[in-house]
Length: 157
Image (cartoon, rainbow, N blue to C red):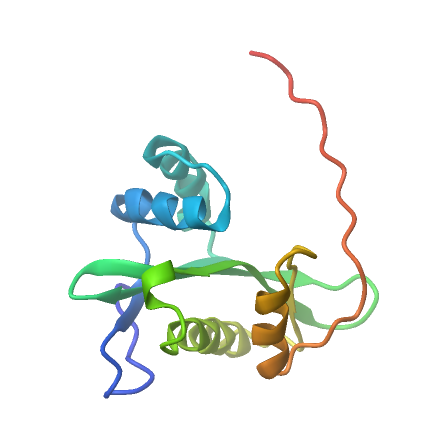
C-alpha cells in the first residue's frame, strides 16, 4: 500500500505508508518528540517494523515533505475475546500543528485497525504530555489506568 486516499480532498496534505527511505524524516520527527534519533537508528528500527504485517507506519506529507507520522499495530487480548489496536507513536512537525494533520493521521490509523476487526484502540502517553492527552480525549479516548515501565540493562556486545 503506497498511498492512502486523502480523508478530505480539500486538505493540503496527503497520507501514505512509510518506506525505509523515509527514515531521515521520521528521525527528525522523533527528535521533536524528545527522542534523539539518527537516520541510521531509524533505519534499523524501521527495517523490522515495515516487514511486520500487524503494524503500519503512516506519514502525512505536503509536496513530498514529511510533516507527520503515526505508527500502529494489532494485539490480542488475554482478558477478553477479540483483538485491540495500539497507536505506538504519533507526531506532527511543530510548524504544522493545529491544522488537522494529527486528527487525519489518527483517523487513518483507526481505519486501518478497524478494517482488521479490533474492538478497542490503546494509546500510551507520557504524564508530561498534557496537551496530547486533551487531543486524544477530544477523539473519544479515555484514561483507564497507568503505565509502568522497567528499563532492562543492555548486554554490551
